[in-house]
Image (cartoon, rainbow, N blue to C red; front, top):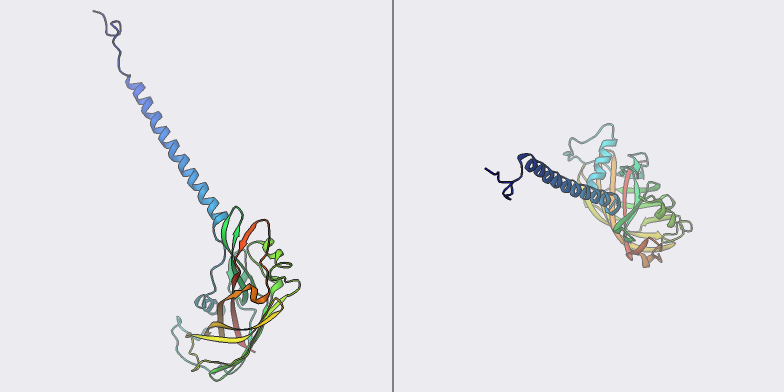
Length: 274
């Protein structure tokens, strides 16, 4: 009897061929999945290294207080719960030996003054530019429940951001630090606390004084937060600055598409008794 092949009938795939096709199909699926994973990984890497906003976190009184606690070899508080008060009378000076300052590791546990401004970069998009300098001097005088005098000076020529090109441009553009190397603030109105601040309690006050920036002096009122941590007075502030008020022209560069017409100044200062 003639077999089915000789009679023109087709036979189905052999078990070996079916297994081969199945394995090929699974391999194709895994190749597609692998390609998608690779694309996502590359995309995540591009976002992390290029589009991610690398500006450090904004100044924060609690973070600053923790830095002061960590720096003290012996603390007058226990887990931040002490409520005792002390005599704060006298002159307190900015202490530049507390904490560390390292832009590459985002370590800002020392006294510093800085800026924040939003910019649009070619091929990258919107980012926050932030620069800080640890070169700050100053003093604070307290009499009873009142701060009667305060002044500080920041050396702007040592401002550091995450891009040395930006730092270099500030010498001749925007802040023009080669011509105006410092920024100063001098208190012109006493600050009344109401009561002597207790250890670890946060005090929020406004400070009115003369701010000199880019060669222009203007009276400003800035919000301050202060906290007594052991033998240290911690002061932080973050406030808006309109560039035109200080005759600051927005920087221009091939990579910089736009810069906002205002920014923020921020500070973190540690005062200890002189």
